[in-house]
Each structure stands twice: as C-alpha cells, then as structure tokens.
Length: 279
Ligand code: ADP
Ligand code: MG
Image (cartoon, rainbow, N blue to C red):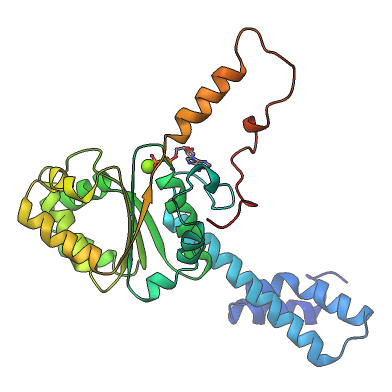
C-alpha cells in the first residue's frame, strides 16, 4: 500500500503537516520500515523520528541563514592557507569562528593590504558563526552607506536601522576603498547603534590613522574608533597579495622553456591550509 492509499500513512502525513514536522513527514516511511526490520523498541523508534526532525530543522535553518548572509563567494577557513600569512594567529581566527565574540558583543577588525585574504577570512569566520547559530549579514561599506542614504532620503531611516537589529553579526567589507561622502555620518550612526548591542566584523585596507579619509570628520572618526575598538579583536594581515603571488607563480611556471613537465601543485587546491600548523 502506498502513501496515498494507506489511511494510517495519510493520517500521519496530515498530522505532520499540522504540527509542522516536515523532516519527520519525509523520513517517517523509511524510519518505520527500518525500525520494523531491526525489531527496534518503541522508544528507539520515537527517538529516531525526533532526531530526523531536529536534523531537518537544523539543515533548513542553516540554508536560510546562509542565504540571509549574502556572502559574495563561498570561502572557508579550511581553504585558507595560513602559512602564507605567518603573522596571522590561526588559533585566534579559529576561536573567533566559534562565534563566542558575538555573545560578548565584541567586534573583529581585519586590517591589511589588498589581496591579503581579509575578505576570505571574514567570510570563513562568519560561516563558522552561522554554524554556531548566529544570524549574519555581509555587506560592503559603500553599499551599506548607499542603502542608509536611500533610506534617509525616503524618510525610512529608523525603520531601516531597526531591520538590522535581528542580525547578530554584520560583516562590513572594504571600508576605505572609497570615501563615503554624505554616507559617512550615517555609517557612523549605524556602527554607533550597534555598540554593545551587536557585533561588527570590519575589513579595511586602511590603518586606523587613515579612517578619517573615509568618514571625513576627525571628531566623528575618533568617536567611532573609540566605540569600535573598545571591545575589538584586531587581526593584522601583513604580507603580499595572495592574488599577485599566485599569478606571479603561475607566470613563472608557464615560462617559455619549462625545465621539466612536473605538474604544478599550486594550481589546484594549493591554497588548502587545512593541515597547516597552528600559528
Ligand atoms: P582582501 O580582502 O584582503 O583584499 P581577499 O580575501 O579578497 O583579499 O583575497 C583575494 C583572493 O585571494 C581571494 O580569492 C582569496 O580566496 C585568495 N586568498 C587570499 N589569501 C589567501 C590565503 N592565505 N589562502 C588561500 N586563498 C587566499
Ligand atoms: Mg576584500
């Protein structure tokens, strides 16, 4: 008898829908069959049913939170080559990826030259935070400033700011590549409102001393830095551009007269630093 003709199955289907148990509804036929075959106790069977529902909810929530985060690229800490940046404390990065700093309403600030892996690491840490249950949203500083300006122009700034309150961690990428103009004070307001209420993970190519170039106002910049750095983990990305190094290596490897036909390990998966020692 199939699901549509078996009255017990149909009723189970109905109850699962009413109680909003999609994971159990999907898994129930197989779980019941396996329980019968293994001559399982009723308790073991019920436990498996509930475990299926829990797993399905976790997966569903994770997928939703990943979509909500809007990461620009699927980067992970496993694919980050920590050996390329010996000064970057790997153990600290991995600890931040557990999301404990979010519960303490602390911030993370990644500073360094372009191409040194700030955005990659930021996404990797934020991914870990999502897996630990946090709500995350990734946005560039310029995009956020533009959204804030648009919200202000439409007289919906308070509502717009409020819409960010449910986000536990805002990843603010690329602060400093472009000046923010009239968006500067609004971005200040955004960051100030999160102070001790939510976390920020900021990446910037500018040292703190040059943030004034972004915000354009010395006292505003000082006030922002005061708040941001009060509870902050600062990660320094000191090294040459990874992109530049990779293309340079590739160019050298594809020179006109290669010495030997040895395959180049760096071309694929060469950036995998998963087995690199803790820095
Ligand atoms: P930044 O944000 O500092 O400008 P990105 O994080 O965008 O740099 O890195 C540039 C590119 O190089 C990305 O594709 C990134 O995945 C890669 N990359 C940078 N550093 C590393 C590293 N240490 N290991 C693996 N990939 C890296
Ligand atoms: Mg970047």
